[in-house]
Length: 242
Image (cartoon, rainbow, N blue to C red; front, side, top):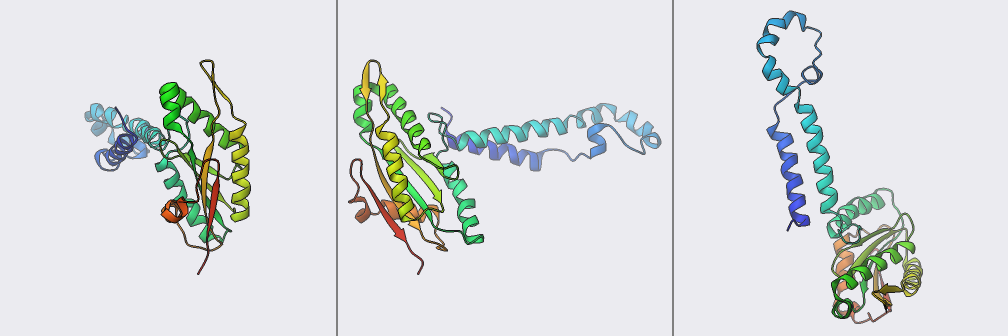
């Protein structure tokens, strides 16, 4: 089975082939045009077979670059929900955190959201029922977000949100919107009803705090913070500048 890591590795291999394996070619070789072609016709004639192959390289390189883009997109996407995966949000977070420091932006919130009782849902409704629940919960969370927020599915039952310009009060409001959308989600699966709930935790990097994704994630996952979690509950921790 092909994994997200395999696709990322393949993209890197294709990129290396383009950078190191392709022969050098000029624009004149690529399109067959050369202002001095008349003076070099005898030589060109003797290389006709080789130059024909050379002219195909631009098209091959273009196709390979398109394949790199496709592989990288697949490597950063959760195939079930269509949302970015852990690699996707970690990649995006690098530019988001760099941008907020460069432009002295305001606070930023990382939210982790667990779908409650996924194991029990899978046991009762089998994996297709659990998969449908994950998809519908993902859609419910999207409905609660702003266009500037970034949502990903980072694990079996876990979602993550990066919410720029969001302080502790904004994180609380976000939690309430998510809770409302999820609580209104009713999943009809083979004649039975699934009513999902979620648990949430937040960490907020205050204005001008040089935090990163992993730091905020560890803050949410800390043992003392985790004790405040509960079904359909949320907690929020603020990371302040020293």
